[in-house]
Image (cartoon, rainbow, N blue to C red):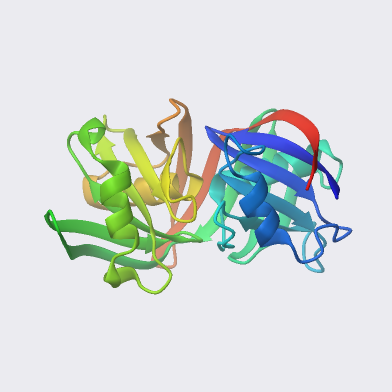
Length: 267
């Protein structure tokens, strides 16, 4: 099978986007994600994004991790999908699209894409986790997908892959596991973030939902006010907007997004 694809990037998160409205993948989505997301063996990406038809929005977005799993949501993936849909005339510069986590609204301004992510759910502060290296305090929340956030003082010294893996698979978060964000406050407006992504099973250069989770915890526990600037490992800034709404926080994410290249692959 020959597939047309587009490589997209959102602040260092890279994705393969395929228009699957004609159901060309025919139920092989997980298999194909595992195959083409492998770096050095295929196109390589942090995830596969599919655009499909929707009865309640402009289109439906599905995300598949490199391990073939299908998460509920991906912040930077959603921003890349929105830009792709606009460039391919699938949707206008203001659009909504369906995800497992709900309907997302997006707005495009040149190469900057802003998405409204809805409300924070399942907030649990100050969870004490027992690890082999000792106990750690983490803060848990769901921003479309689950995240555990740890506040640190020397971010560059953190063994993100080792510690992130232990927390990601910790019994506290069974059965689905969690993404893990390590954050350090840089100033009154900015928090730096490093993320271990579930499904990628390693550190990525950026994570949209991780940026939101990091901003929420920095706001609640350290007093940062909206908009919160989140410095990613790619060096790019993601901006998170927070608004009190019915006793919880409604969140939005904005940042640069780009088309890298288009191609064809035979699988």
